[in-house]
Every structure is written in structure tokens, then in C-alpha cells.
Image 1: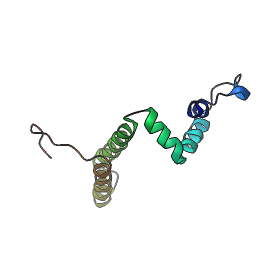
Image 2: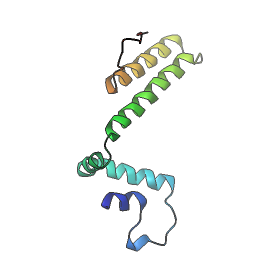
Image 3: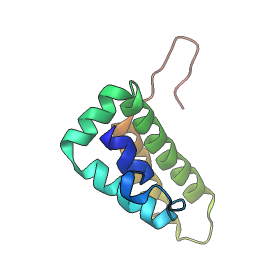
Image 4: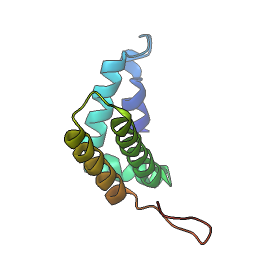
Length: 105
């Protein structure tokens, strides 16, 4: 209940106000996630949120690696290093699972 009120900005004192701005919402989200008790409550209320967060983060890093590889505006050595770091970070966040039908590239 407290999480919902904080995230939506609704309580008795702000019942008639309009929706929050994106920067205000981001600030509220940052405040919520910086509190360990709130993070624990969110994880308990939303099963799978931690896995989803890791997958999204790893996916964004893999996409950044791909886009960096495709960018020919960067020097080749810089491109290789940035791509390698992004791939390593993604792999550390969410290791790829290789099944019998998959090939590792």
C-alpha cells in the first residue's frame, strides 16, 4: 500500500493533483529502489521481477554491444573494447543458457 502510494503519488493530500512528470516519477522510483526494505517488499509482491530486471539489463547491454560493433565511426580498437566490456557485463548479469539445439557463437 505504501509502495503504491509513493509510486503513484496518491495520498489524501494529493488526491486532486495531475499525473507526475517523468522526472518526478524517475526520482520517486530511484528513492524507492534505494531503500532495502522497499526493494524486498517489491520482490515479494512481484515474483519474477528480479529475473525480469536482469534479463532487461543484460538485453540492453547486448544491444549496446551489437550497435557498437556496427558503428564504424569509432576507431576499431575502441569498438572492440567497448563491445567486449558490454558483452562481459551482460554475461555476468544473465549468463546465456545453452540447450542441446543451440550453438554457441
